[in-house]
Length: 395
Image 1 (tube, rainbow, N blue to C red):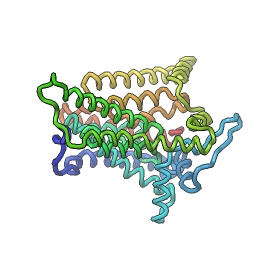
Image 2: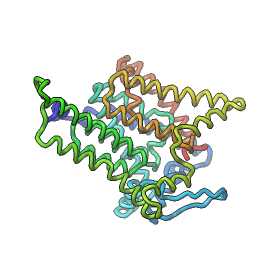
Image 3: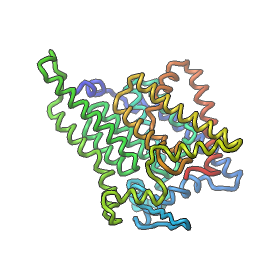
Image 4: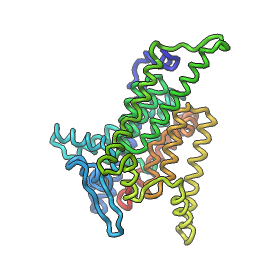
């Protein structure tokens, strides 16, 4: 067994250790749903419709119902194709509808609820492994109280992706390479940002190979212990990781007749792509042409500065390299996308390692103070989520 496996193997009561985090997470999400229901009722809207039948939820359920091939041509010439949406969530919706009386949208909602709990557990497992149980609980609660945390309960793919990513990263940290690769492949079938999970696994695997090679040199008095076949499992994990995303992207290219880069053309039809953050910078700069929109510009700049600061703290705290790579790729892809600026907060939601420095600080505080902080932020998040979803919401 590897050193990491030795640290984690045979630890009984995994669910019991995670129970406080999961119960706290469920309480925060229940509060958010309750406030959303009350707010929506006051506006004569259906909270359930907001959660299951708007924006991306409609595209996912549409793919589940009729398969791929639907597109909307806009007056300006843009073409919105359902090929932009990765298939794992629609597959699960179709499977659930086939074996139950639930509709595709109902199944999407159930999948998101269950996946959000799995994601919370995965975040706890990663944080506990690196910083201890108390920090694990705090990390889950911080993820729950994010301002756009209501998305975790929507029929969207964010919760499903975060669950697969978190458990894949945990498998990497504990030396379970094949499991990590399989989960990374599923993450790659969920969202384009599955690339971040593959990058984290590949980086960790390459570093492990280099470490093994150095350990075998005569200069080292004692090479690290390795399980028989560990190198083979590592390679297998590396081969599995990109299969999901690569398979879907290549299929889209074949279907559109535009080759391996066909998926980029599909995204271009949504005016979405990677421009290094130029369009986002212009969007922020445009906020300073009037008042009070300039306040929004200041808020956006402060948000970006906060993200950069959190990442720097993660590096200074010597967070494991796979977590740094994963969080870095997710953040860069979210901030440097060329469209849908209002979606950036939810696109950043899977970057949970950025919350770990805050979780460590919260874990060091008194329990009463931590509870007060989390409770206050949870209430604010619930109100904001209800306001947001009843307004512009996540495109």
